[in-house]
Amino acid sequence: MNGGMYQGDFRPIGLYIDNGRELTPANTAMLTGAPSQIPNFYKKPNGVFYIGDGEVGILETERFLADRPGANFATQSGPMLMIDGAIHPAFIVNSTDRKPRNGVGVSSPTEVHFVITKGWVNFYDLARFFRDGLGCSNALFLDGGVAPGLYAPKFGRNDTPGHGGYGPIIAVVK
Image (cartoon, rainbow, N blue to C red; front, side):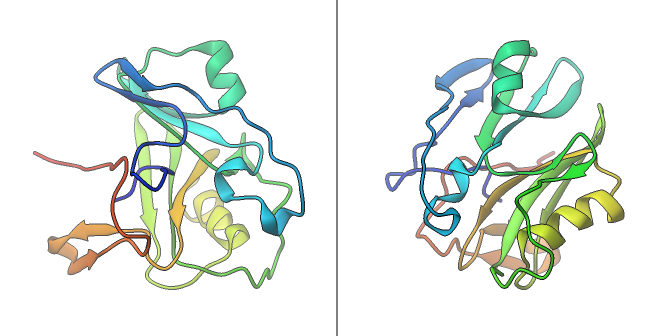
């Protein structure tokens, strides 16, 4: 499934590490304006999902950059859904901003949960699912829109991304 935000040419908007090499630097740009006018990636805090040294993690971007955990893979996206056990404070209960969405949550240093919706959901409800349903203390929004994009024939899913293609992807393979 889509593994983060990307530009029109499918390059990552923010930090992207693959095989331990930083291919795209972190994006710490701040946008101002009405919340509805700021693209999701720039809704602070955004964060980084990473895999490395026998653990998985999600950290706010600034914390990731300060701590620099050893990452073999990392993708920056946003906004954070869960931050140290709390739902992102900007999310609104019963918000009408509902779309198909996907995200990633971490419930332990070795347990990661990838979630993609079958229908339309707001950020608050997606964050609540990571917290209450999966026990995640940190979770990150990866993508959304008309269709976040998922190829999983085993589950009968071949959802083409609504924005025309895949940028960074996350796949589980044997």
